[in-house]
Image 1 (cartoon, rainbow, N blue to C red):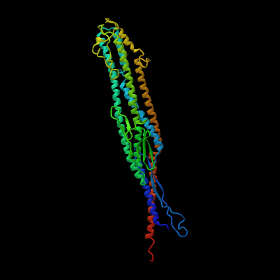
Image 2 (image 1 turned 90 degrees about the vertical axis):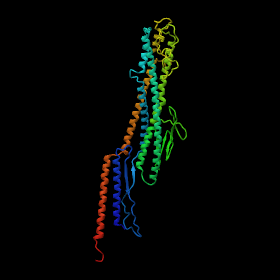
Image 3 (image 1 turned 180 degrees about the vertical axis):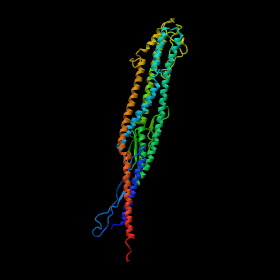
Image 4 (image 1 turned 30 degrees about the horizontal axis):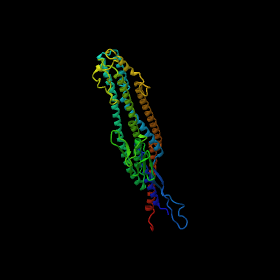
Length: 468
């Protein structure tokens, strides 16, 4: 038969269940602004009913309910949105890193200032033009050497600065690799904890939130993806190569040297990310900066070749000395271009004349000045200035493209995150309503206890004593 103590048991379970629901709601409110937190909910269900055995008909007309239980703490999640969000985020980070490096390169080239290389080239050609009008003027000759040295130093400084930027990116790459390995170890450790908690029948929701944050950071760094198994483990991979499987990690390693390459330590396979910060850094270090340095080297080499060819055919101020190089013929890169020892600090040896024994002849200086307009670059289709201007224009286009792609993918990531937050995020208004709901239910359960207490008091103290 039914027992009055069943009522106390039902009331107690109701109180405990509503108390758990209130605690979960409080946990949600406390973490409303915690990055990566996903709201939780106490999932309640009716307890198994009690069946009264009987030899004949049932004592009661059916099974009696035994109240309520919290069978699990649900975590709201959208794995499909997580994957899309991380992909967009990793692409955005890659383009953003590339745009940042390009901005550094742009600042180094400084073409929007008076110290730009175009300005140095113009000054170099103008110096020859001025010297041609008065080739015996020692001040103009000294000025011409100064302009040549300034042009060479401008190329040197840009090449050196680009190499330094390249080395800085290499240092950042090493940092990112170290961070990836550290994150992988943390994820593997969380995998062990999560599996242990799930095997015990509990829900490791906060541990999974921590792991999701680490996976998201991995996606930012390298475009990593994750697949969650039924036992709670996360399998993390980058570009199809496993990074974390259960408690096992497959670490990345780097080679030594000025520009390190990355490879998988276990099988020595090269690592080439297609998304994330590492992809942007590698593209800048190994693609963009070498291209710009190569363009500067081509400019320097052609400048040395063309200027020296004309200068060697001219005559110094004494009208006898010829065959002199203006630039050092061995300095054929932007990093090594410099004035030749034939003319350095010797303005009288600048070959302004085309004829011997004609100190007033400035025709060779005119020819050198006319190099400004000759199509000697890019397969004889561009002048020196046009060639370099095109490189600067291409750099500007690259910056605009990288920044546009970074904004575009960031906007996509924000939109996906906003959609995801409508489901997994904490809504304080909703939590306040839930808190009131659970509070009222708890109060009702305490009222049940009071009723049961009054009923027991009546039975025990108010029904008299048998036999009196």
